[in-house]
Image (spheres, one colour):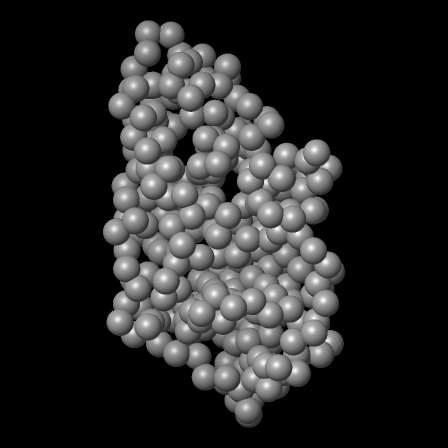
Length: 284
């Protein structure tokens, strides 16, 4: 039985049956000239999130972070961080690329399996699977529809065009985080998560997926944390782009570097921010 079954529901084949029911960084200005497209609403200036987002194990993650921070793992007399590694806890999904165009449209991203998605400023979401044809659309009420890139309602024309622009830009211009990590047998059976919410600080971008994973990408040194509360694990991608996954309970036992401990403390603050965040009135 694949590891995916421990943390994610299965993926079923996509049948585009609802199409008839839903009657260099390019500036994307050409898209604004298209007729008959769906209006994209205004966004909250500081945070993007759906009207009633699920907390997705955020409270459990905060509990885990409080425990490891209280243990002061970087202050142990002997630190054996490598003993805390657990490759079995490598995340199934993480965000390997992203581009922020929220001043006009939204945040585009690519998952590690090469599927792509956009969280639009109007709190709708669109994903394209790796086959380049299967689409998943999530409206403001979190209702999911499955479509085909060959057949979709005209109201989604602008969003699908934007999705393709984001995909092409990321493919041509951005490096893939965790590119050297091979997919495991069974990972392709897992249901794709989508971006629940995100926000930026001066130091990092924080991304929360619907499978509960929280990812923090630090701007200055391009290091990354991927936190999975269901596996009680953290993945750290360092400045050399080396990808290592640790059990938090083992870091508590064997200790960790001051560098990782500092990032875990920052992650705690960001998880608290996720818990405290509320939808803006304009989003409801």
